[in-house]
Length: 259
Image (tube, rainbow, N blue to C red; front, side, top):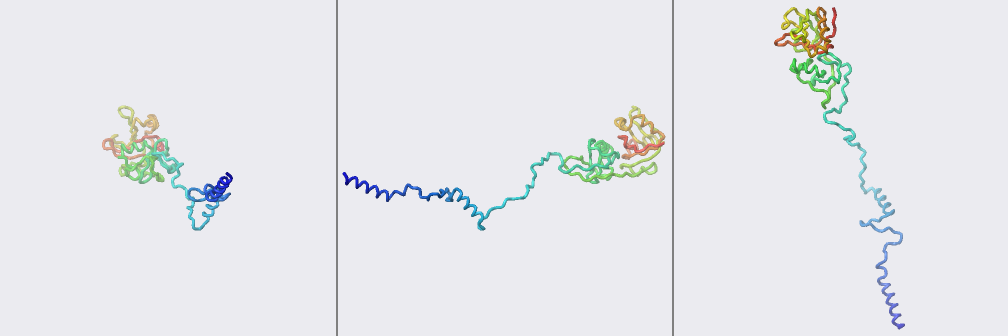
């Protein structure tokens, strides 16, 4: 029995000597365990990475300091312009000579840069084939449709009289003359301020249509122009039926009235 116990003890020591280290942890005490890619974890791994980054053989891309080309915080809505508004100080409607007012709708000639109110463009479309009174081209564009606006300028019209007005048809002019008489249409709602003693279809005149009577000062004011000297600014046309005329659409077109 004692021999059997002695044999078992010897066998246990032999097996311990041969296989005792197989299930033990091979990593020395205090060392971090290796990660799946073989690099150590923990604080020593961080130190190794820090040392690697300092190595001249290690490439690390630099962070970009350039600003993005597109400022995403600026919202651009369709149909609007990103450029600043044109300064309208001192600019006048090339047709009427009135100071520009954005609330009245603005148009600009893309060739010569003069401005018009919407009502003036409506007259030019009806009476002058949409042509600009300053340069004669049909290139009027609405302001604020997205296109960048050119710097504006004013149009200085020619000053004419009864002696030379026939050489200025199709242009905005400043005319000065003495009123011969004021005629009223058969329907009593249109006026012709005549400067010549000829018939109203032959002589030069200012025409006030019924839709513009109120804006032009009213019927009594128009009648009061008889026998007075009037300075007026407007588009001079030679109508194929009604002859030479300037159509008045607002009172500001009448620049001066003297006795």
